[in-house]
Length: 154
Image (cartoon, rainbow, N blue to C red; front, side, top):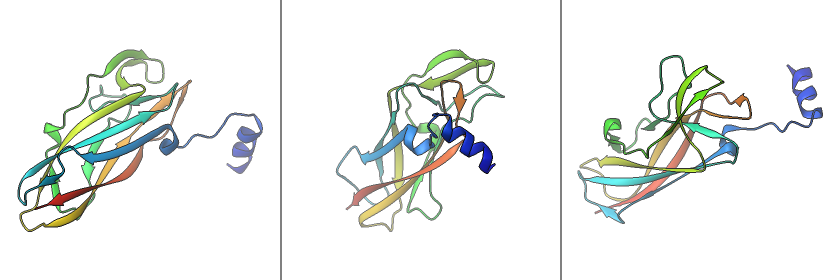
C-alpha cells in the first residue's frame, strides 16, 4: 500500500480527498424558529471543476446516493422525503456503465428540520451528509461530512 501511494505521488497525480472536492455549507433560511416548529435549512455543495456529485436517487448498482441526515443525539428531526433537491443532470456514466444522476458546480438543497419542543436558545444542528464524487475516470470512496448549522430557537 505504501509503495502504491508513493508511486502515485511521484506520478504527479494529486491525491484528492472527498472534503477537498465537495465543500458543504449550511444556514437557516429564516433567522429563528419556534420550539416544536420547523425551520428550513439551506445546504449548499460547491463542487470542484471536473468533478460530479451524485444525487439523492440512483439506479441499483450505481454510485452511493447522496444522503442528508442528522447526527445521533441531535435536538432536531428531518423528514428525508421532504428534502427539496435541485434537478439533477443525467448521463451514461462510464464508471458504473449505467445512467446516473449528478450535480456539477453547485447544488443547493432545502432541508426541513423540526425542532424539539424542549429546545430553546441558540442550538447547533449537526447535519451528516454522505456522498460520493467522481471525476476524470476516478471515483472517490463514499464519505460522510459533518456540517453544523446554528438555529436560534424562540
